[in-house]
Image (cartoon, rainbow, N blue to C red; front, side, top):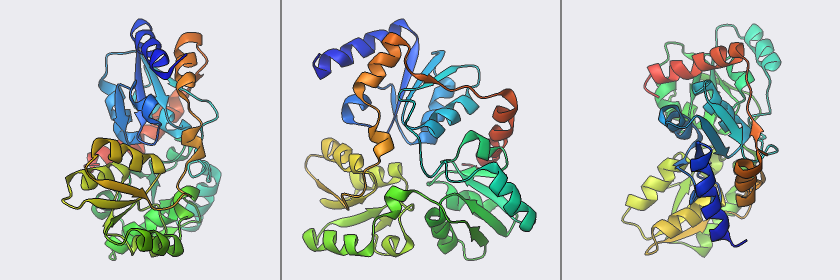
Length: 305
């Protein structure tokens, strides 16, 4: 079948079977075209709460589907490709955090949204890359244990010197792979391009940026900036998305290292087979996990996240 034929079948099937399709911003364009909503993981989870459909299909990675289930436990939630995980989300478990909390009991545990449902159950508050600085600034505690991304945590520390932030070794291996040499090489090739960087990149890379922000922040900045050329320091699909949206501008990938194999694991045929043959991986979380994990998300919402 041709791509368009597959897409038409998906559009028909999702209506017949009462599915809402969510696609993370890093998904391929042919998947985004059949989705009801595209965007960052948390924004998609919030959208899923309010849609009338009883079934949700997440085109992304497992922690994203888990977050949807936490916020919409009454709905059936599926991950379009069951092997699509997130190395960062899986780096730490609650036993490790229990041990660290025993050693540093006065520290409040701040969890990046890119964590498993199980890990969220032992955290005090959740943050997204766009809300991390805002949420941490509002916490009464001065001492913060920020997990799992040490680069995002370092960025928050740079913005909030009044806080004492403890970091563990962890983070996104894709963003962390980019080096200062990669930046120098890209800038030499495109000297007039603005450098837009995700805070999951190393501090030394972030220091070179013209703008630091979440995926959605990078997209909005690039779309509204009067500049015409940009180096995009996040997953390569964002450069493609921006180029399609703004053909009059030029977008260059900062490094060829910025390819997330887990995001690329999902194909259009995965989406089709999930809807047509019930081959998606259903996300099942017990009520205790849902209620405990929900607490740190609710705390974030209460603080304006």
